[in-house]
Length: 316
Image (tube, rainbow, N blue to C red; front, side, top):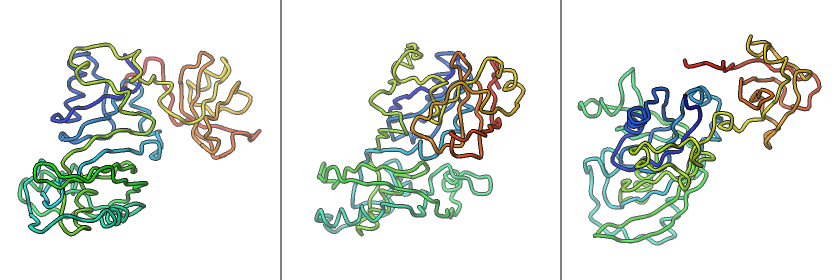
């Protein structure tokens, strides 16, 4: 059983689940899943978790899963999906020759925290039904705004190609942000409409596309455990690590609390305010996740309680 996280470079034209199916078929690994769906027309970083590492996803803080995208907006048209895969819903017949000041003003208006309306063609569920399925069936779909945090949007290039006026932008945002909606909303702000015509997810948290495992290697079944794209189970999380004494292993396996006397070493990883801790065996294997209501790990009365204990042969 492989335990850890692989950064896969998903090519455009396939779904995120296609990547999982390929891994299961080629490597005969059943226990794997992705975190953060990437649309078929998009390419770039897709995080695939294996084995016990699947149990770590919920312990990764949202701020450690922020994303960076390189996106191309095509001005003058809108589509029902907000991207190039949809049907054209409107065309703008006037000039889109905006000044850089006008473009930057429109772009900058979507920096910050706000409620974003997702695309109708999305996997968001409404009373148990997926929005895109309802839309394809001709049903009326009304989605409410979802809180997002766009840290920055930067104009990389403003250019014309094959009669299309394009804006190439780089977006740094929180998880859950729809770049299709960002493209659509910028077009509405400019007054001409726009849709997303290219998308590259460059980064998710600490995982960067430049070190991603290419899809063609997955197709050929090339081993990845020793590749730089693979993060071992014990290195997936960034929260502080606590090494415990050998005699403490029994307490942990039984889900008991541990205190300062059970600990031999604490590594803060520059996250001294964390209330979640990785518990390592003397051999430095990740054996549990514990929490504390004390933010300072320098507290002499530190008491940690179990959140998740990883048994040696755990496969569930």
